[in-house]
Length: 215
Image (cartoon, rainbow, N blue to C red):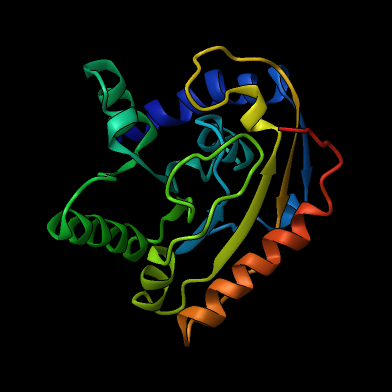
């Protein structure tokens, strides 16, 4: 209960003001965000702001059920960051250089969260790329969705955040940013069809972005 209260306070007092005041945020199809889990939110990834922006979009009454899958090497890099990430934000840490045992542990933790009706924030590219450039999608999200029945995947495209806090910098620069939420994908019969649908939605959602940047 304490961690739930801390998360609600942190999102309400820190994250939402940062996102909605410091950023010029244009949100399209916000009504398509899920009101309950289990759900996988599959977003593109250009900035560490991505996680905070997605958290800020959910109502305070639901935010305790939203669990980001986030890089351990960044979010657990020091004692304070680790405590905040694990006990307040509630991340599921992923070891991006781990072995098969690490990957199995990650998938098990994700499945436990989905079994509890959580909403997982995942980034199919795996890591941040160049600002505003989408990298190749990895199939981990397909295996997670396939092994958890009746769990829709909602694609989300974000533009501008890679310019606001790009990879390799610690300087925040306010920019106008887009967040476009897509339609749920709930057919996972084969990886090729599933990944192609996610990729097609990314391309279509990108066309609705009104802010454009040249990387």
